[in-house]
Length: 226
Image (tube, rainbow, N blue to C red; front, side, top):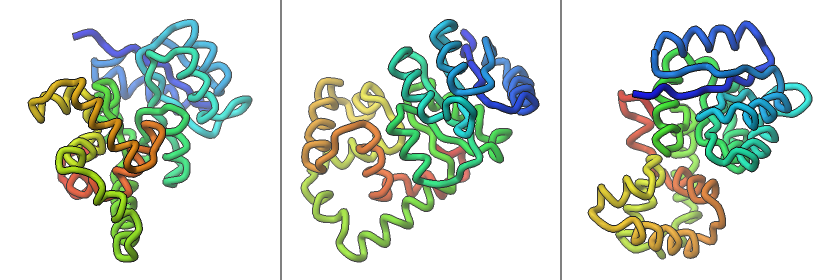
């Protein structure tokens, strides 16, 4: 199996070294470069074309969110996994809007990083567990007051199934295989979901699915979390 080519972007050299050791132990990743700030991350990604960039947020010259935005524009085939100390849903949704495919806390790197990388590389979205739980709790509070409910009721049973699978990080092809339908049919349903909910981007669609509590079972599972 071909190893994932990874670029590490963090302004702390010792932390980058620790990540390199952690990734080397898995035998599944090859660190092809390092960057000490966001600008350098964009430049090296354009030069090296890694499969994945593991990106910090708080970096000099260019923060990780803006670096992610620029990198995804210049290197659309390269995925970004945010690895940060910021445990806030605000930063998470900003990261999604910038084009990141995952968000993990540094405190959980030793246990979650390997699984997070596999989720992101397979086309899914990784969300650290405590954020999943907070989003579910937020949705339950909104549901009590009727918020979110009316729009959700517009969706057909099939559209709700697809929204559920999107929330779990499934790709269009994976959804098609699970539901035994064509990929084009999944894309059509996905478009209807976005239209009915008034959403305009992948990040907004995922955000709605998360607020709607569609990851509740994943947040309480004993397995690694998306």
